[in-house]
Length: 516
Image (cartoon, rainbow, N blue to C red; front, side, top):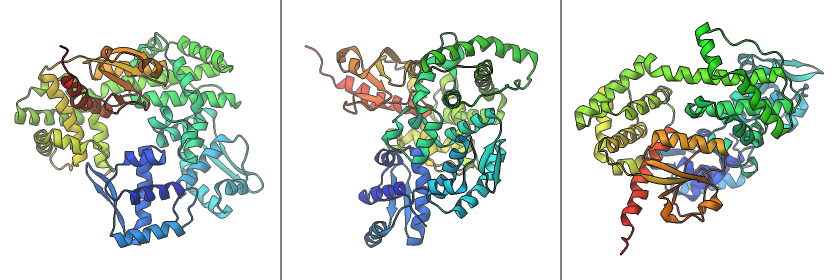
């Protein structure tokens, strides 16, 4: 079995660190996202198996190669004498799909083979595998001798397919973090180019118009999806791909349609296109403006649907109530009075059950610290889960996330309120800064945002004017002085931030010498 350059780098990093390392530490070293690291680890496990070795994954500790010192010496020799390939088979197919979605003309099989550094026969086999996926997306793969290979279909579906690929294979760190030239795979760089990574910031700033109130309540995944869809449209317009006539939205009843029209009137899309036209030098036809309007309306509809989920999905609601019942009986805290706990658990439950039912690998880098800080609470949550969800195997990593929800609730119920003055350093634009501020005010109301500033300004502010620096990028500061979050502030990040404030920020304030 072949190994790629990136997989080799990961194995070498594991060999250099015989004790456990986290996926996040590996991601920093090889300059990819943690999602990519988890994919690569699955392939590395397959590569190690014939050598009689495996990856050992310890809950809350990390990953290491489980082998004797002699086996590790053999593994080092294997790496030294082994040539690596450019792509894994899955990456090769993805890269081929990206090329075909991006090209307006047929591509010769020989050209694909040359780009991918494989034989024409391998390209043909890969195309056989890709054909069903392309068909499921609503597109058609055309292959003819002397003609080449081309993907046919409407421009609307082309854009949807590109955005779907980006959502599947990119994450927030790719979109908002490092620039493409700073690292990452060739496939990721190709995807970032197809979604117009360089234009995302411009699109985001143009999107934040003063009267789009629903935008501040958009779930982070929907926000990322909307940005990618709009940015893909900009790229395609720049390349000369016109959208054509937009089919009408699915009829959901006059009352619902009227509500959608009131929340997202067509002038919002026209104004957005006008701002982008000025900043990017592009011309947006009436059909393109109609397409942008459709994207905004569909996003608002998804937000509306997600608000109804906790009421409609009685199974999730029952699971949450059962867990809160068990915890309230065990600890005697009035958890049912904490609305934020109930909403947080409802929002957390759906992905939890999807991960458990799909037997997905679950990573919780804070598990060890959680068990140390909340030892008794951890056991209470674990026992409550066992009683509330009989027959469901919930790993300790997920228990750790639930403990963070209940730990935060206990802090709220104890009414130990202390205001934390924070400044935000955000390089992703005013939209991300406003999004982060909005989420902070809802998730952690104890935080009062003093200002959103550049790092240059933050470095010159007197330290007595703030308690905490929140940044979306790495800063040249001591790790105890600031906390890094994504502009989207996921629920997991929110709980990590609470933990940081309790264990670091407030502790530092407590230890400050008193003035004479």
